[in-house]
Length: 361
Image (cartoon, rainbow, N blue to C red; front, side, top):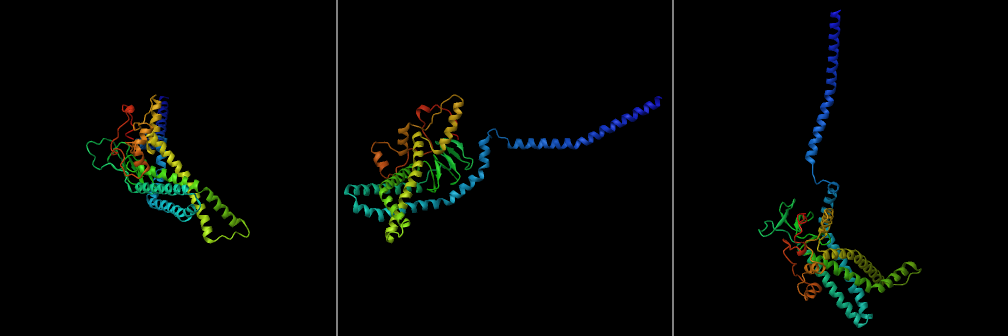
């Protein structure tokens, strides 16, 4: 009896051991694969970990191919945009000289003739001067070997060079620009410290010229438009000569073009006027908004360190140091340089003690 029991228990122990071994061998591949998966995921997370990663960073990464495409297209089409500005402006000037000015000299009273001739030519000179200066003047770049008295607030990740305050890298020009506002394809140039005034003055005087042309040519436009409607709406059409039809179409073309540019460029000019009043650039506008939200969460008030008040900001921007400069440097063509070198900036006294990370952005 004892022998049978011993044999039975031995057989049962052997069966149980075989079952355990079989289960162990069946679960081994699953555990090994799971361990490899967890280890690979941990390695991937450790390589891609970034404490600053958020939804904005993910969107920037997704739109990086779009940014690259826009940068390269803008770089190659800058010359085309400049040629387009010259052609469109030249066409309006030719229409005014060959079509409208002879009519004004014949039909307008002498005071209005003097007004149109003097104001029109002054506005044209200011447009041409500031556009030429905005194209040909370099916006300013930090030196490759910075001097010891220049305080660099950060290092450019693309140029691998010290970057002064208010300096940003332009991916189109592939360089850092002092007090960069934006890259303008209509100038084929960056708008920065040394040509920002020329850019804004061009926008201002071009808007003024377009408004002047639209308002003064309102009656001529409606007469020309009515004549064109008669040509295509009546049967038989009026017997206009080729020169008359060309005159009507030229007046309508010039008025529509000037009105469209006045609306579009006027909105841009007003936006930049608001930025100048606040003492900030287009890039700094976005940076300051983020900084303002960050300080609001901490119960603090953000103050722009480069703002000297509305009137003070305009004086610094336009280079007005004396009262006569409002005429010699604003209302007349002037090549005076901006205030400062663009490498260092004096902060406003009311915010000199404000310690933020704004300069290093």
